[in-house]
Length: 150
Ligand SMILES: [Zn+2]
Image (cartoon, rainbow, N blue to C red):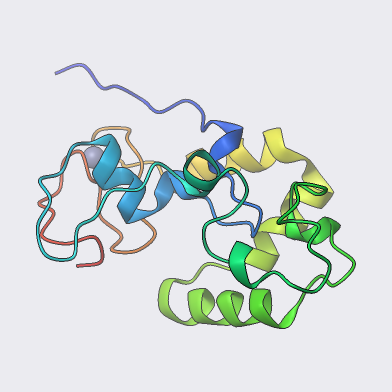
């Protein structure tokens, strides 16, 4: 069987908060056409879906820079890291071992291209070369998927 390696992640899939939508279970369910059932919903990614940000946008009231498209990433905001980003970061660190703020700092120090290259390596499935979900640690190509987070 030919292994179809994921070689890169589209920059549009890196959300303003630092979330890598390419390894989100909702995005992987959409990409791999996992049948919709309880707990599985499709998302095309925060930026593709809502232009700027799906998670923090409506609550981003400190400067409105993100909501109005003045900045591309939360780390370019005057309020960075704001209370809401800190809350999201804490939740993801505790539940999924991912830090949005850590990702943003990596983007700032290494640049987006290097960050993406490191993410591809970090989440690559050893069996099929696809991407593993940050939410359930499963490959949506070759593991059995019962929900986006189980
Ligand atoms: Zn796989």
